[in-house]
Image 1 (cartoon, helix red, strand yellow):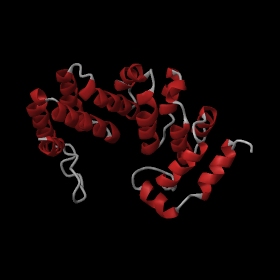
Image 2 (image 1 turned 180 degrees about the horizontal axis):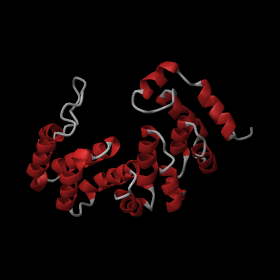
Image 3 (image 1 turned 90 degrees about the vertical axis):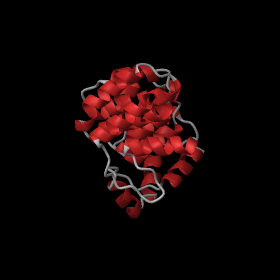
Length: 219
């Protein structure tokens, strides 16, 4: 049996489109309506196919881009290729999956982290912050310097960048007791995400609450 083409796969994803799923996703800035469990089932059937993954990412279809991150070989991408891919990740989910499932596993991850961290595009910069947050627990560097930047820039940062910086602030406070008081104080003073609507039984993304709750659970 012939291997499925990119057109075959995009057609299958279109068949799985659910208007109710799309309506929920659109509230979060995503423009696809494929149930993620079904998407993962398609990925399981396809297995790893690097060439197909590249073709899927090159489409303008968000579900196809998500699928690409599940069937690719992260270490097979060149640094500049990943940089270009991030800049075409139009939606939050495609952006997050590319960073989380592909870039983090790439040998180019730290080089890209440093490149993206100070990028003038706030969405690209948010990827640099996400990769930096990963390092906070495992390979911390200048945490005081990071806190200085957060203290100065987070309050007025655009949405996705602000969210990424806030995550980094919380991770520093959670993982490093010597920086915890400062991290909580910065969060309390800036009040970023203080009023974010949080469902019952979920932890608020407001950094002082987030830090305190995770530390309490670990005690």
